[in-house]
Image (cartoon, rainbow, N blue to C red; front, side, top):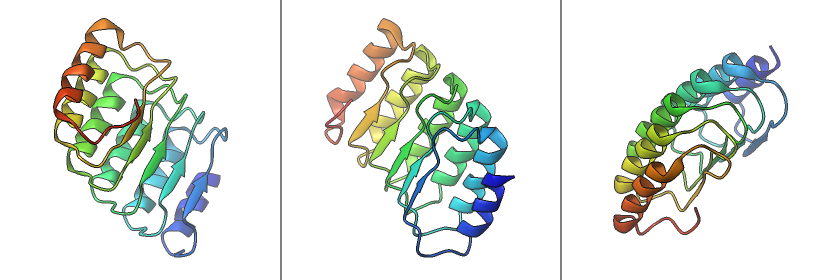
Length: 159
C-alpha cells in the first residue's frame, strides 16, 4: 500500500529526482506500482530499490517501464531475489533504453541464462557504463558471455 501511494504521487510530482526505498519490503506488487508511475514520470533519475523482495515479477514490471522511461539513469536492484527471468526482462529493456547508465543487480539469483541475456543487451546498448553483478550465480559460462559482450561494448567502464 505504501509503494502504491508513492507511485500515485510520482505520477504528478515533478520535484522528486531520487527515490531511495531500499529495505522496505515493497515486493513485486509495490515494484509494479512504481513501474507504472515511471512510465509517466519524467523527473526521477535514480531508483534505489535494494532488498525489497521484488523478484522476477517485479523486475519484469520495472523492465517494461524502462522501455519507455527517458529519465532514469540509475537503477539499483541489489538483493531482490531476481533470477534469470527477471534479468532477461531487464536485458530486453536495456536493448532499447538509452538513458540508464548504471544498473545494480548484485546479490540476486542471476545464473548463466540471465548473464547471457544481459550480455546480449550490452552488445547493443551504448548507454550503460556500470553494471553490478557480484554475488550472483553467473558461473564460467555467464562470465564468458559477458566477456564476449565487452569485446564489442566500449561504454561499460565498471563491471
